[in-house]
Amino acid sequence: MSPTAIWTMYLFEMSRFFRSLVQSLISPVISTSLYFVVFGAAIGRSIEEMDGIPYGAFIVPGLVMLSVMTQAVSNGSFGIYFPKFMGTIYEQLSAPVSFLEIVIAYAGAASTKALLIGVIILGTSTFFVDLHIQHPAMAAAFLLLTCISFSLMGFIIGIWAESFEQLQLVPLLIITPLVFLGGSFYSISLLPGIWHTISLFNPVVYLVSGFRWSFFGTAEVPVGLSLMAIAAFTALCLVVIWRIFQTGWRIRQ
Image (cartoon, rainbow, N blue to C red; front, side):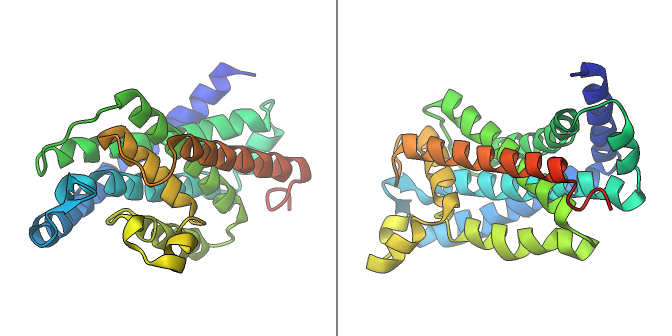
C-alpha cells in the first residue's frame, strides 16, 4: 500500500471541495439552520418536550445525521463518478495502486467533507439551543462511522450511475425519506402499533437513536444494536466494493 498515492488522490478530492466552498459547505449549513428555525422555534413552541428533552435540542442529532448522510453520499458518489465520466478512472486502474488505495482516498475525502459539515452544523446548533453531550467519545464514534459508511455507499452509487441524474436518484428517493422517517424529528415510540414495528426495519432509526443517546443518555433502541447496525452496513458496503473491483462492473467497459 502506497501512502503517497492515497494522500495525492485524497488532496485532489479535498481541493475540489475547497474550490466550491460556498456550494459544498455554506449551503448545507444555511439549509440546516433553516430547519432549526422552522422545527426548533416554530414547531417547538407547540411541542415543548420529546421524551423529556426540550424539542429544540431533541432534533439536533437528527439534523446532524440528515446533513452528514446526504453529504457523505453526495460527495462519495460524485467523487468517483467524475473521473469515470472524464475517463481518468482508467489511468488510476492502470497505475500501480490497488483498489483499496482508491477506495481509501475517495471515501476518506468524502468522509472528511461530511464530518467537517457535521461538526460545523453541530457548532451552529449551539446558537439556537442549549446543548450538552453526555458521551462525546460515542458521539464522535457514531458520527465518524456514519460518515465512512455512507461515503462508501456513495462510492457504490457513483460507480453504478451512468448519468448525473442518477447520482441524485438514490439520495432523493431513498436516503432523505429514510432519514425523515427514521425518528429525526420525533420519537418512534409515538408511532402506533404496526407503524412502530415497521419503523424498526429502517436502518436510519438505529443511527439516529444511537447518536441521540450519546447526547442525552436515552435511546429508542439498544445502543449496542445501533453500533452493530452501522458496523454491518459498513462491512456490507466494503464487500460490494470489493466485488465491483474484482469483476470490473461498470468500470471496465
